[in-house]
Length: 306
Image 1 (cartoon, rainbow, N blue to C red):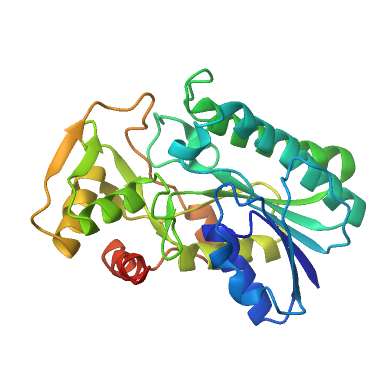
Image 2 (image 1 turned 45 degrees about the vertical axis):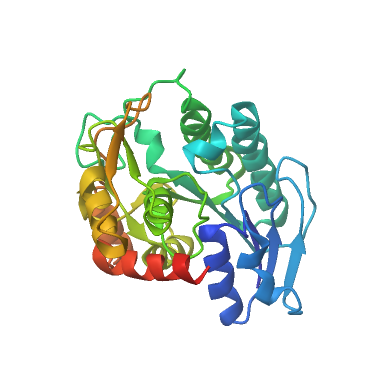
């Protein structure tokens, strides 16, 4: 079977590629390395089963593939706010191109959506049936509305063209291969603590997230891809943690002498995020298993090695 992984040099994409190649599949990776890192896939470059195409996902491409894993899009607010128009283009045109390729090949495609589609939710935890509470004109909306539109476009391809789609709503993934200057909270805190710098928290730190270790997420994504379910499915940890407690935990693990400094809160920073994963448990027999304490140990070790 031939698999195409867009954004394959990123955190999630590169782990998917590892899993596919270990099971003796053929893999095509497409990445422009705007946020991905070639180091994440370098061990496969000389493997005959692997092909790298260095290209922007907004450019059309013609390939023969059986399955498509579509991850290509900046996921960190620090990254996607740099060029919000290009972020919107990547979400719309990139997803359109991948759906067209899936339609042409009669291939199954998994769309990586995000917990961001719930915005600053008024329902907690967030089930897939919740439509979200979103500011469509904030600085985050290039990504938020982009992911919402990706889901809409994918479902239209299912309805109009019978395209074999899968949709994963991913909640805050972390783990080895996170870029040290990624801009997301776990990588920020680890990098700051390792360098002996203060840990900077935006706002009070009472806002919460549910952090899912990458190995757990990969298992969930595989189960979604192999399922017969076309509608969105939440994938994330049930372990809800405040940003302040996350900072204290990382501080304790790396350098208890670093200070925690509070900065001005970010615009439209969601106050609470936790997935309702009942659907994943029922349909996929999946739930995240790695506790944040254990996942952070492995992530910090990877940061120190690099």
